[in-house]
Image (cartoon, rainbow, N blue to C red; front, side, top):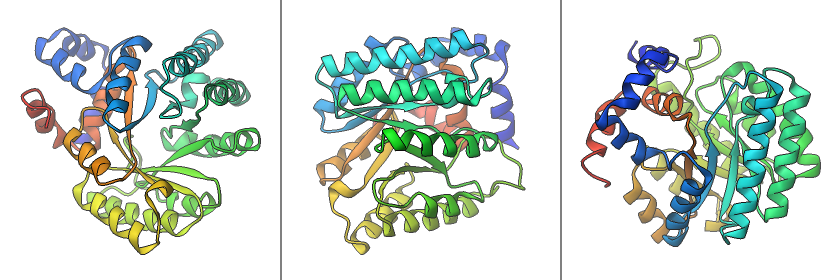
Length: 306
């Protein structure tokens, strides 16, 4: 119930204005969003890379309403990747890309063409792209575009969401050599017909999917802050004889930074998902909805960066 309320609030422009103008909210936003510009994102990225972490940069914004908006999103990423390369931050930095920001809901081919342009810019910058996954209505289109992109850009990755009932099968399809899969729990309001609803069911699905990816020939990217799932990831890596360069952990900027550094110090690859841009409100609300207990976490986060 609370999760549904939070996700509904993500669509409220009135609440967004209220949150944006509250001093305490600005502290939270600064904690979990790098800033509004590419320069802000690269400044944060430099600090993370200097700490031995890698980064996935996400320009916030989705569900563009016009081809012009989709083109602007493409050009933002092209410029961002060039700037990251010029700053010497690649290949430690990759781009995280929502296809709806590139016009997926307007025209699938338009989004695919824009995504290819971003992938080409990533190759020129010495890095790659991971496609974010959105609500379940876009899953088939995202996987189809991924297949096309990998023909020319084989290092292109994709996120899969463990709360979807289909994801274990998708993991089996994508666990082949060269595949890069970011496994996360999922952050959208989905019907029971397509998604597990309880935390226990989602966690069990995450572990099943993790086992599929770890036993395959691809490159698993385990996106979780759950200490128990992190420990299971460490255990499965040992069980399947994966070395530190054969998988990675991923966590959100501002969430469990001490744990990020601990894992990196133990030799694991740790990638931090760093969002930036003016469209921070829906992102922040989805992070709360992933786990409503995060409401208390976000409040405590203002007091401590641990």
